[in-house]
Amino acid sequence: MNWRIGTRLWSGLLVLVVLFLATGLLVVQQYPGLPTPPAMTTWSLPAFRYTRDLASMFTLGALVVGAFLIPGSSRRVLNWAWGWATIWFLTLAALLIFTISDVEAISIFDALNPNTWWQFLASSYVGRVFAFQFLAVGIAWVFLALLQRMPAFVTKVAGTCCVVIACGAPAFLGHGGFTGEHVSMTISLAIHIAAVSLWVGGLAVVVALLLMDATIAPALLPRFSLMALWCVIVLAETGLLNASLRESSITAFVSTLYGSFILLKATLLGWLIYFGWIQRTKALPTLKTSGQSRALVIRFAGTEFLLMATAIAISITMSRLGFETPATNFSTFTPLAILTLALLIPALIDTALKHRTQPATPRTARLANLLRNYPEIPSMLMLVMVVETAGLEIPVSLFGANAGTLISSLLLLVAGWLWFISINGPRRLTGIILVMIGFPIALILSEALSDASTSWQLMVLTVIAAECVFGALIFTGSKATAAKNEPTPLESSHV
Image 1 (tube, rainbow, N blue to C red):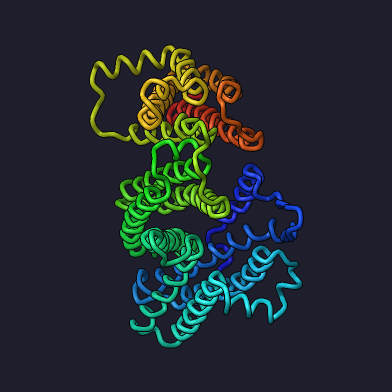
Image 2: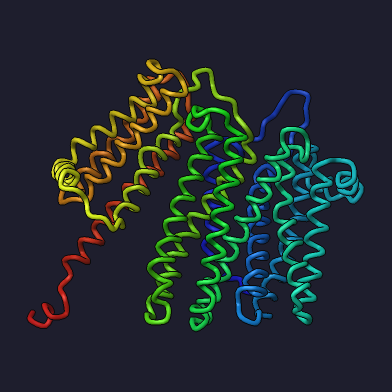
């Protein structure tokens, strides 16, 4: 089994710990007269769930790539799938024990009692979902073992169906399964999880194969690119459906922590789509003619893994956090929503527009040059919009909650986009430093002006994330400047 599959995806464990600390989910709630789960259970559950998710993704990815995408199939890759299915089953068993400890507020040793976990599997709804997962993974494990000796098409299809069903089974834990209004939510979430598993796991296996054998790239990458495109389409559609079912108003996406995480996940998906588009349009057409294309695919995939790891960690945090109802002042923006609207989404828009094929009009070019020559103006505009959006809320008071929230969000997006345009010029560093210093101050001022209260942990997380963005902008700018100023071979020969 290849342990190097998706190495960077394990960085999501660190993101998961940070998110749980910032949201207070690692604090064991104690109520007088009621038993509480051990602290070890509260701390270990997220890590085991993350491991379970990655193991299921690697299993599905290795199975599909090895059975269908590689010409003639690959027993080596199918062996990877079998090994990760074994880890999946063992992690699921550990997750069951810690879930029993969490649900029934008992120690790990009490949960290991056969009578305890057997009764839990047989008598509770959560236990029956776990039993179904065990059954699906066990059957898939048998099919994967058979594929080592009999790689028939029927065996491949049957094994893939079992793995897909097992990947989507955790969706039934969230909303009571097939009951009433939760039917659409549960089914769409199961499809969503299956599409994510195939995309993430498939990419991890493809990169592992490319690192071992570069000659397979021309045959493998176009097939995986097409499969990934369909996964993204299904992922976006089911994600949009789930978001509409969970949050019934525009304000919920910016005023609640759960809604802000949905907004952040959608932004990460946008970045992943951008990197996938770059690979599909830049690297794939030159695979047979350029040896650098494979390195470009692997380099972009490393960045995608970090984004995917963050998205998986956010999903686990959301499942533990649960739904939230908007606060009394339900138009108040959370710090994460401000970060996403002011920096992350405008950065995506600016980066994508840099690759447009149509030249800018003279009027647009003049405006861009003005912004680049005077970055102080868009910098102060963005900081003022942060204070207005999260603190003053003037559009909300004028146009109502939903319309005012939408207007404020759009104004913040535009201000952030103008700022990103301004830092693409000769005075780039000035604009970045101004906002780097002013953004934390604007957030603190907004918190003082707003009626809602935000935990200091979440505020610190938002500030650190924003400063990381500013630091990355400075680093990439200095790197680009150094590359531009580097002498050409002809110039070097005259020195």
